[in-house]
Image (cartoon, rainbow, N blue to C red):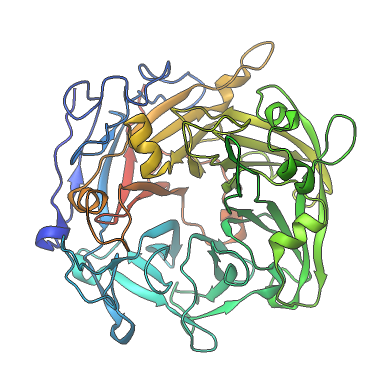
Length: 537
């Protein structure tokens, strides 16, 4: 049995020494008995995919706690908040990986500490044999994009600034989602804000993975909305998953966010325009489920049916906007077009081996144990189509959320069948259930079984801890910094920057040296980790 050991705390000593944790199954101190527990808590997952032993429970929300990983994995830090940027924008306080120093204050636990920037979605790319990890930053006074040089052994020289300036010289919004578009050779960045601030920006990279000019171009044709998830398919379409919380209703919140697909006029140049579409789900009687209906009646039985395992609904794409690029409110336009809103969908990815015919996306839900509305705890949905550009398809829930498995956010496939999902439940729900966030593995192959399908079992591969800096923020730190740590940026890739390397195009092999897994422990020390899997049977 392996016991978690406390890593160094760079927020206190600003150490530039790399942190390594070998963490495993813990049944004693540091875990709340039964906190966030469920029937999946013990044992390994089925024989269809990777044999991963489950962590028995989430960490309780009490004091400082280490991350606890399945004994099937180890993790090593690759970057953390106090690392300096090798090319800082000092004038704007963009000086460190996880802190913006435009707010006066030290990089430590103090009443006026610098703003934490919250590195978010990770993108791993290999250019000419050089290994890089890119990420956008979600918090602080301005957005920016960083690159971790995974081959650099000196931590002080490891992280560089890719972009913090828009094409017109202004600051761009804080960044949540990130992906690599091999057709345009751009990093696509999403700003999770309501119109007009939200939307998609592009930053061009050259053949060496360096920024061409470091300027982010706003891609107006993709609309302005609270976009978070962003992915490309093999046809060059851009899929967007929106996360905007709905208005409060009796017992919870109304559905208010959409899933989009942008079909470009020219997949090598998104500035030339195209057609933005939004997903519409069709009721069993053949009529669409619209925002007007679901927001007027958030207890509509359709919502409960959509969140019931084994149900399937037909889908179609409705046009939100088309023609020449022009700024527009995508959320309002999707509602007017009759698209179907959901309860805070966040991120999506194509299933490997499906030839981009299966798209899985998470839905966060209401993140409160007091919610009594249907769909309160979200889940994971599967959208199936005959091809990525098809006009119609079907949707079914692949995993139903509950109190112990909710706030589902980032998503990545570890193998063809093994789906990694991580929680972002928030401090309020952490307190309600006395449990910090977890990362889960769902074996979709085992869920098929023989005969009738059965719901997949969630195996906890990660029980996130709470570092000293996040604990300080949660218990009285400055109001502009978030509290508990959050799991974000789960990412599995071999780094192939060509169209053949699009997420979902290849079958991942976590046991192979080319495939690497990353996640970020957002807030607090803002540490990004690399996970190494030990999957021998």
